[in-house]
Image 1: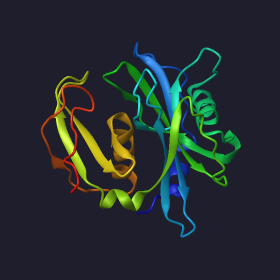
Image 2 (image 1 turned 30 degrees about the vertical axis):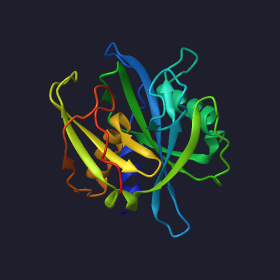
Image 3 (image 1 turned 60 degrees about the vertical axis):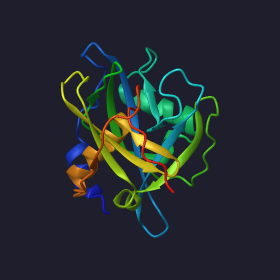
Image 4 (image 1 turned 120 degrees about the vertical axis):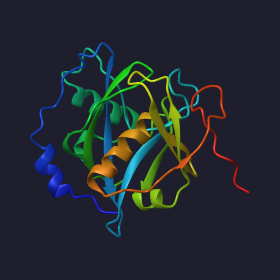
Length: 212
């Protein structure tokens, strides 16, 4: 799987970085940090949130969080959270530009910032927020179990939730939505997920069958 970063720089580098949400939802932002392996294969850095957190405990997420009044912009929010969560400096990132924002059913307006990680993987995760980091090669999304479920209780009405069943856990929700949208738009990702029914009473609403 290839990412056309030269094209992306032309499309996104001159985009105006959003300030804060005007939707009435809680403004937040995340970094979408791509990296390259020694074989020049693209991957993405994700966090596994600590189980004791009040919001979205244990979920696989992009580095990021809520806008703070001390932040000048939503990009500043994402960079601050990156440093707090991963222990790496913002200087290790090349910011490409902002991507499509997303309103969630949990009350957040999320603005993603596409970036490239240029560091040496000297991470020191904040154990109060992050259990561990995940270095996910994008090729693995071509073979990992992939599901979708219809969900009607969403601000925009009928909505599809997507799930990748990874060894580190379930990649789903807003994180999966943002990543999938990007891969479909720029990487010709056209894999069809398996349609499944809800089997849990609360989020994530679906639990994949156990591997045997």
